[in-house]
Image 1: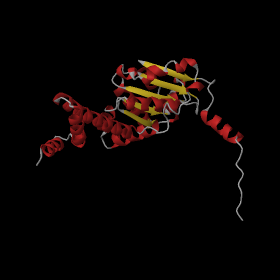
Image 2: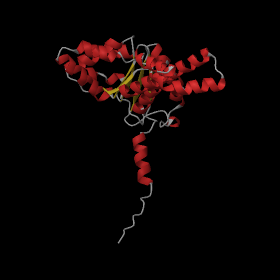
Image 3: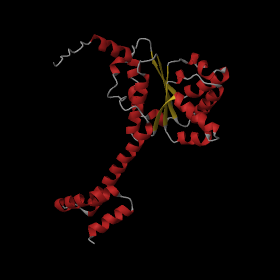
Image 4: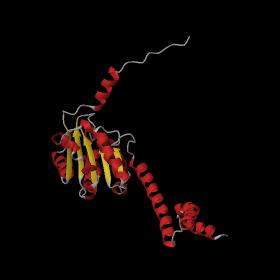
Amino acid sequence: MSTEEIIRLHCKTLRLTAMATALDESIRCAEQDNWSLALFLSHLLEQEIAARQQRRLKRLRAASKLPPAKTFTTFDESRLPLRIRRQLPHLQDGDFVNRHQNVLCFGLPGTGKTHLAAAIGHQLVESGRSVLFIPTFKLVGRLLRAKQVYELEQELKRLDKFEVVILDDIGYVQQSRQEMEVLFTFLSERYERHSLVITSNLVFSEWDKIFKDPLTTAAAIDRVVHHSIIIEFGRDIKSMRMEEAQKRAKSPIPLQTSVG
């Protein structure tokens, strides 16, 4: 067995798969350019690190459940007022995650709240953050099922692994007492420990529709507002879906030719 084969075998044993793959090409480059031993080893380690980072990003993307098309590339920032555009760099760099801050997006349906929240999530994932995107009704159902089989604590621990949880459309949830309780428990568990990104078509004064009880509503609001960044999509922002529908309605219908 040659020295190269022995090295490759050792790499595979140590699960340094990228180093094993890059070994032959690295040896060729080292001999051709007269690399030092330190440079050769550094190059191999860089290949392994880069490959591991790519594998980790792939896992983070899959675990995030983010809608793939809703990124900043497809987001029309020009539609937003200047007051919101000024906040985007701070949201994209992820500093709010380090501070355990929440991001709260309020506005009418179709104004881009979900797209912005998802775009922030994609940006965070690409920087190596763990993110989960989930509609609020699905999260509530998930927690309620866990509670019914006495596994709520374990489910909360699984969710705790995500640095950021994006709760979409919290305003559409009309909970029973049990559903409201598990949602409140989730919000309390993350308070000052991890970040939330929440989208809602209901302003805080209407959150009693979600939590029913005035004291629970006040406590929930207190937990999400403390250390938070609030983005309001005012009534001056038109619905993206409405604009797209209007554009489609105005576009000429292509003529169809029949083949006899």
